[in-house]
Image (cartoon, rainbow, N blue to C red; front, side, top):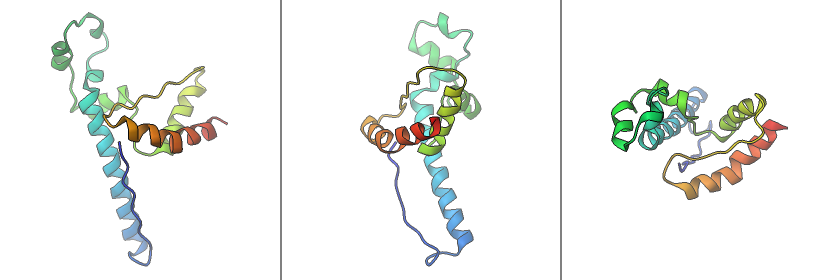
Length: 129
């Protein structure tokens, strides 16, 4: 997911309005991340006790519910904030995992890899330290 930056200052907006604009922008990023997960990983919402018996992609489509936001968030780590994602990954690692593999479920892999290299991985190293 490509993140769109913006600049706003208290000279342009009252502090409460500025905070509301920033939060709206963050929600828009999270909505885009949720949309990518629903589009590309909707099969993650299929019931876990039956997926091993499914044979065709249509079977996953029939049993998945990309509109079930809670099921999608339970199956896929979704977010647009690299620091927040790094903290979530660090909590997972703290359980005792030796390795973490991070995969972007969206289609824009180049943007993800660039952002992971410049923001996510440094934040993850810091969170794990």
